[in-house]
Length: 70
Image (cartoon, rainbow, N blue to C red; front, side):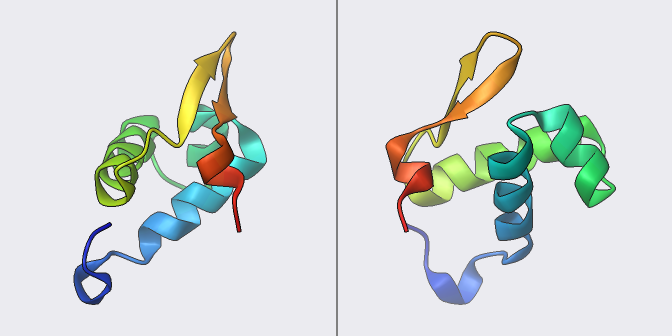
């Protein structure tokens, strides 16, 4: 995991929206961002946690057990 002193806490807001909406498009609308910005944030989250976090399932995203863990 990335150093917490340099971790962008705004990424956690994107993660929360993705966990709620299971869609980059809907998460973007919820956070008032563009879909490419949410996709880029998801890539940064994946890099920071060293974990996939979500996988494609049909038209949406399914969180991994890691993403759902407290």
